[in-house]
Amino acid sequence: MSITVSKFCLAALVLFSVTSAHAQTLSGCQPPPPLPPNPKPGVNGLTFSKDGKTLVVAGGDGKIRLIDSAAGTVQRILSGHTNAIYIAVFSPDEKLLASSSRDLTARVWDVASGRELHKFTGFRCAVKSVAFNPDGRTIAASGNDGMIKLWDLKTEKELQSFVHINSKDIDMSVYSIAFDRTGKKIYGANGDGTISEWDIAAGKETRVWKAHDGYVFRVQFNRDYSLLASSGQDAKVKLWDTSDWHEVRSMSMARADAPANIPSTGLTFSHDGKLIAAADSGFDQKFTTYVYLQALVWSVQTGEKLWTIGGHKFDINGLTFTRDDKLLLTGSVDRTIKFWDMKTGNETRTISMPQQ
Image 1 (tube, helix red, strand yellow):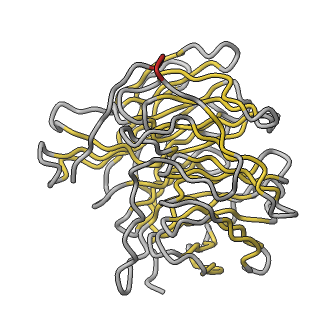
Image 2 (image 1 turned 60 degrees about the horizontal axis):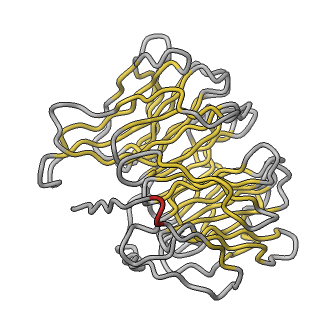
Image 3 (image 1 turned 90 degrees about the vertical axis):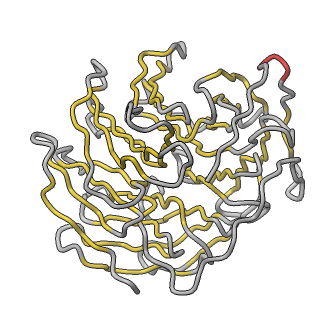
């Protein structure tokens, strides 16, 4: 396993938008390999319904599982993706789910029936992230080939396709996206270590700033949109004040006993906005052996690290708080979901994903 980090002068960036549904970038990304036979249902993403009764699990086996959070049993399995799924998220009215996958697609599902409604294509490599805009009428997705695409959900018409920088010499990936409160702007976590702000109607990149050394892996707003959180290859979680975009604080995930680390897709605020959690994996110098697997919880107000959570055997990719914020859930490639008490930091429960 190896990671190459390209550094460059931000002033030299060439910024443009691509409007053709068939346009491709200069990215050197490659389509991922197919799933192996009988893939394991590792946990890549976790999302709760608003009532807290249903837990949505994005699976490494290409399936979405809807779990009864009280009983821990599978209510429904959504099948259709042909490779691992990174995340699955609810629409604002929770009638739909959207998912992004290594199979080069984003898909939209009817929650009540489990039926696939839409399949969005146009990517050459893995689709890393997907999001509904706040009114639920538009869906966006981004991936390793450097494009952010937006579609009208009713007509399936592609509305925009944005590219931050078009160069085969850098990591062009847009690893994560997030709409602002109005749905008029979208933010991208870029492989070159920057965060981009795009004006959707104008089709222009209106702001870009250097956020992390190495790639930015995840961006997430808190509930009132006063803060944007980002995590990056530099093993840091940063908070940005959305009123003027200054950095509020930086919190480190790095440990002295691990010379290298990889952040996970897990980054989440508690619903009351008081806590933030992130996860990463530490490796030896050769990236061949785990040194640690951890999720960390900090106070948003002070930046104090409250809990360091372990207990998993492989990468922790899913993080979500229960609706009352009393518990943090961690989901891992090891096929388990663990519940952690935010008063004590102790594990209270484990759900294991069935092989189905």
